[in-house]
Length: 127
Image 1 (cartoon, rainbow, N blue to C red):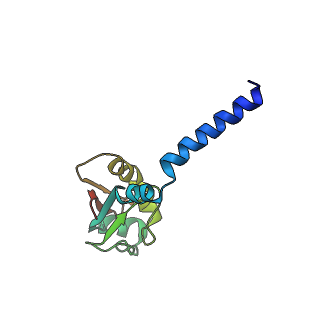
Image 2 (cartoon, rainbow, N blue to C red; image 1 turned 90 degrees about the horizontal axis):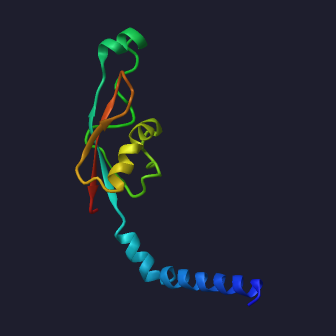
């Protein structure tokens, strides 16, 4: 068998095998339905008034982005939700990925704003 024909037959066989596994729309829909989802709940929005007064002249106030009890459903550990603070997302992203890829018990974490940290609960969910 000539090299060109061999490579063509291998490519066709590999493409056919891939198409057989992925092609049906029903398989893709089932995979999407089984995808892991996380719930991120804002537990506490805090402010260290002494540090705020000393380093920001009392003008910082608590975080304006989050409210206690606010919930976010995460369907991808790589995409920050629309109304989520990008700085907080960067701070907790490793915990998001840890939960998404297997950790079963909830994680309590916070953003790294030293004067007004926000505390989050990350948990796996069915919804």
